[in-house]
Image: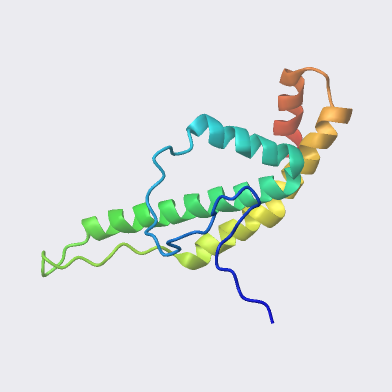
Length: 141
């Protein structure tokens, strides 16, 4: 039977044992800059183009639907006369619509646009202006 050594010795005589594994989590003093976030996003687009576009489209579509639902419900709540001015009904977000937009954006819109623009880049007109015109007339009328 061997004795258990609680010291982590990496061979150079230095103890690498973590003394306090329950230390509080502190905010990162060096947050990621927006340009670094954009670089990481572009790397994901290069590595996993369709998956990245699907996730992005789902998130943006869901956020747009939630924001639109929130803003339209807060506008209708402000226009209604209430008997008790202290109590206002909370702004409502239609979560079914948010989920529907996320599914449509991620599973339908993103793949169609991904493959359409790939096809347009290889088989479409060489001019950017003409490509935009074909896109607007054929797919996005």
